[in-house]
Image 1 (cartoon, helix red, strand yellow):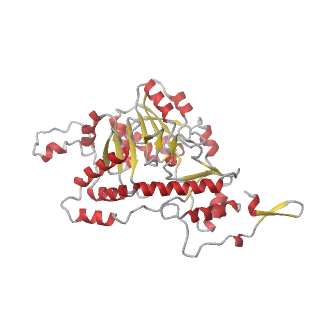
Image 2: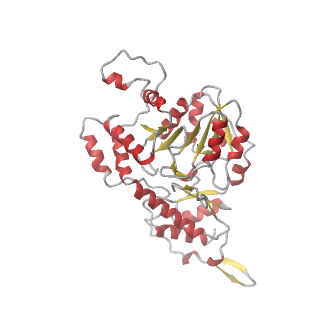
Length: 395
């Protein structure tokens, strides 16, 4: 690919690439990595307090983390902390009443964690195509797929950009089925003034190592229906009513299958430390994303995903571009010690999901074009400028 400002015309207008010596290579021991964990300085003190306390398992810090999360992101919904985002997804599917043989509509383009729990449950996945402008779930395809057998719809806010929630909610209400949003990328994102996490019946967040905030590994489920809260608490702890157990009431029965899906206080301490710095974290990531947008503005051969929508705010977890000859660009970036990757893949390429589908034309169209560029708190705006300059020099 060629960009005029970085090439010169010689001998009857033939374009030749400028020598790569004109772009300074970073120092031998440096490079720009794709991800970097966000662990604030105050985390060490918070974790140390837990390690010197009576509780390191699920205890008061987990409760405090849930309450702080509700204060920061929710209005009426309830937050419950769990051991991973995948735990939260599985728990939300159980609470939504999905069972063996039930049909669910889910995005084909997502982390496999979104869809793997359906395999635990024996549910039938109907993969929905993507919107090529956002890489989010395609609402028109969802409407084509939904039917009286559909038990739930799942959407993913890819890279941190919210889906078209109005249209998805309209479909879910029309068929009286829950809408579950996998918001693993979207902590801090908003849609028409509402925080992601308080719009749908169930929302799921991830605190895995490289997310906006990390608890080492961990997750959160938010519930709109308060009648499900106690059931959710039981299922995340073997089906046991812990409050009754702690009060010494051993008569309580276990009458539903539960799991070991709780968060521990060590993880919650990390989460509390990160929440205290979250506004700063989000603002900085959005600043870096805006710098990418500025750098790529007006360049036809590279499309930055997630721009131009004014009714929602981007949480800026990933910076994804569409390009031709992606492999060549990846090699070029690698030669300048810049990491890049696809990160997520279309799920129907995995045998476990039954093989490739033939009704996903938009996914087919972008499958070989999308690429994720570095975006994390250890970067500087000048790193974005450097990455952009390397890209604009051609590949």
